Image (cartoon, rainbow, N blue to C red):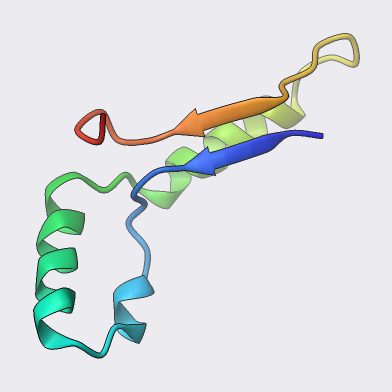
Length: 67
């Protein structure tokens, strides 16, 4: 089993936020340092493409600004 833990990813999550202040703050943060979804897709592909004798058990993928 492989666990991939993404950090702040640029998604359409903000569409579901109803509080205007929270939405504005999240939008500013997303625009500043969120990673694109394809970064997570590449991490998943990396884990899947490993040979049978390699186990990728956990991966944390986050923007460099989110340390």
